Image (cartoon, rainbow, N blue to C red; front, side, top):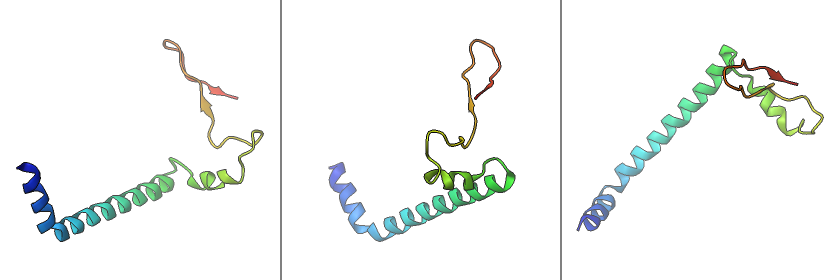
Length: 81
């Protein structure tokens, strides 16, 4: 009974549902792009380094970001070299 009602609702309103889903996906996409540009502009992360990752992927290449060592019971995090 609920399945039949749900299917008839979806079929009768599929244009509106398609429009709403498309607008939501566009809003999420623009939000994500804004997040990327604003975080790069603020200096939190440099995404141009990640763009070169495909070219500089050998084991002896310099890492993009330094790794942090996991802390053990209150010790401070130190960079691993």
